[in-house]
Image (cartoon, rainbow over all chains, first blue to last red; front, top):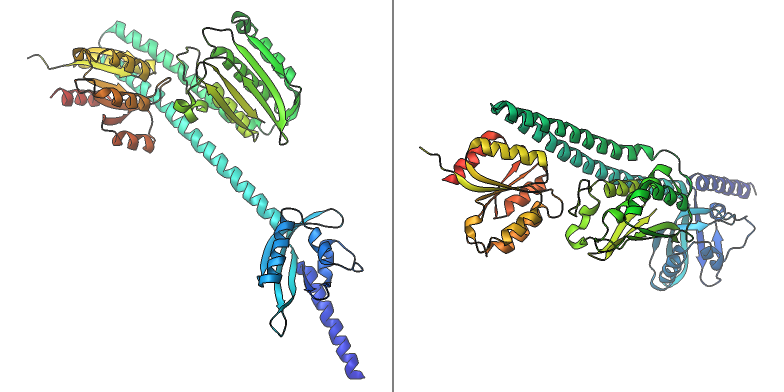
Length: 367
Length: 136
C-alpha cells in the first residue's frame, strides 16, 4: 500500500514538472489514434488553442483553427504522414478560441505499431509568436535599411557628380583667368564665375530639397482631399493653364481622400500637372485627365496627358533621375520627377509611367 | 616654323560654362582652327548625317560628355557606330565626364570608338598633350 502511495506521489511530481516545463517552453504534446480517431492533448496544447481542459478535441477542431494557406498545408502533411509515414515541421498561424492569432511551430510524425503499420500520429505544438514576430520585424527592417542604403548611395553619387562638375568648371575658369593677359577677356571669365556661383548655389538647394524629403517624412500624415490639392495647383498654374488653353478633367470620386504629408501631395500634384503642360504637344492644347481610385487597399492617382510623350525604350530608368531631361525644352531642369519619385517612395509608395511618343503620357502614383 | 594644327574639333556637352572654358583653352593652345559646340548628342549626330558626302567638313576630334539631355554620350556612340561606315574619315573621340563611376569608365574602355576617358576638369597641359598626340 505504501509502495503504491509512493508511486502515485512520484507520478504526480512528474506530471507537475512536465506541466511546468511545457508552460515555460510554451510547448505541448499531442497524440492522434487512427483506429479510435481520438486525440489526446497535453495542457499546453489546450493553452495554445485557448480552450479549456474539458473540451474533447477531434481532428477537425484541431486543423480548423489554422489560417489559410497554412490549414491546407497542414491537411496535406497529415495525409502524407498517415499514408506515407512522412514527418512534418512547419511554422503556421493559428486562431485561438478568443480570436487572437498566434504563430506556432507544428511538428508531427507517424506512430508505428508492432506490426509495422502506421497506427497514429504524435507531435508537438509550440507557441513561437513572439520570436516569429520579432523575426518578421527584423526582416522588414533589413529591407527598409537596404532600401535606404541604396537611396543614400544613389544620393552620394548624385552629390559627387554634380558638385564635381561645378568644381571642375571653377578650376577651368581660374586657370583661364591665370593664363589670359587680356583684361577684357578676364572680365568675361569673371562673369562666368558669377554664373557658376549661381548654379552651384542652385545645385546645393536641390540637394537640400532631397535631404528634406528624408527628414519631413517624420511629420504627421493627415487626411487630405485630393480635390483641394488640385484646386491649389490650378491656382498656382493659372497663368500657364490660361495661356495654353489647357483643359483639366479631374474625377476623384473613386478615392477622394488620402492620408498623406500635405507638402508632399501638393508637390506631387504640382509636378505632374505642370509637366503635363510643360511637355504639351505643339499641335494641340493640353488635355489632362486626373483620376483616383482604390485598388487592393491602396489609393492610386493617374495623371494622363495628350502631350509629347516619352520614348520609354530609350529613356528607361533615367526618367526619374536627377538632372535628366529628355526634350529640347529650355524650362526643363530635370528635378521635378526626381523629387516626386523620392517623395512617393519615402512614403512607401511607387510611381510609374506609361507613354507613347507623340500621343501622351500617363503617370501612375500608388500612394 | 608654323605649328601644325588640328583643323576641326567638336565639343558635345550641355554644360555651358564648361563649353566656354574648354573653347577658351583650345583657343589659347592655338592648336585648332575651328571649334563647334553642340549641347547634346542628337544635334551632333544630325550634323554628321549631313556630312556623309562632304568628308572635308568632318571633325578630326570630338570631346564627348556622358550626361546630356535628349541624347546622352552613350546613345551618341551607338548612333555614331551605325553612321561610321558611311563616313570616309576616321574621327577621334575622347569622352570627358564628371563621372568617377567605375562602370562608366569601364564601359568607355570597352568601346573601340572611344580613344580615352578623361575625368573633368580637363587640365590645360592634358589638352596640350592630346593635341600634340593627335597631330602626329
